[in-house]
Amino acid sequence: MRIRSLPLWLLCQALPCHAQDGLGEALPLLLGGENGARAVAIAVALTLMVLIPGLLLVMTCFTRIIIVLSMLRHAMGMPDTPPNGVLILLAAFLTLLSMGDTFARLEREVAVPLLAQQLDTAQALGRAGEVMKDYMLARTREQDLDAVLELSGKALPATAVSPALVHLVPAFLLGELRLAFQIGFVVFLPFLLVDIIIAGILMSLGMMMVPPVIISLPIKVLMFVSIDGWLLLVRVLLSDSTW
Image (cartoon, rainbow, N blue to C red):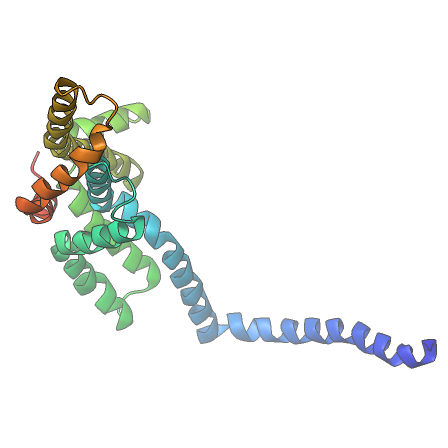
């Protein structure tokens, strides 16, 4: 029995050595010359694909839009309707519409030259960073940027200079969160008034055991639909914010 299993054992021992030799011969071919540049480009592209969701959150208006939509859902008393997937997709498409000029500039100044091999990866990333800087600077308050620079221990610049992304991104996010909560407060008010009125009517009728949400929810839905609330909210979200 041991004699029969000996060839199989020898084969199993030889395969890792053969695979290691093959990998050792293949690595110089993959990393050398044109193949090496292509492999590095593929690795960078895969890394960017992983980072795109994070960049979408911190460098665009996606954060503001998704927060307002979530607050609308809670204000109406339906924390699970519409579902999270629907809100995320709606916020993503609204972001594309709101930042159409910026994305067109990215395509014109970064994507097209990169595909035409007029730019390398480092130059393309640098140009993309400058485009996003211009977008965020136009929508970042000076006091937010000054506060971030002060908290980071950096001296406030005496003249107007382009800040680093590590300082500009949190300042931009602070402004987006501030604006999102301002819009969310305005969205909450009419639904809060409906809840207060319904609760007062039920108490005056002695129907304190009836949950107000049972009556207020359909009224809030009817009110929101009758004033075309989705369109009004989208117009507000897509309007370019001015400070």
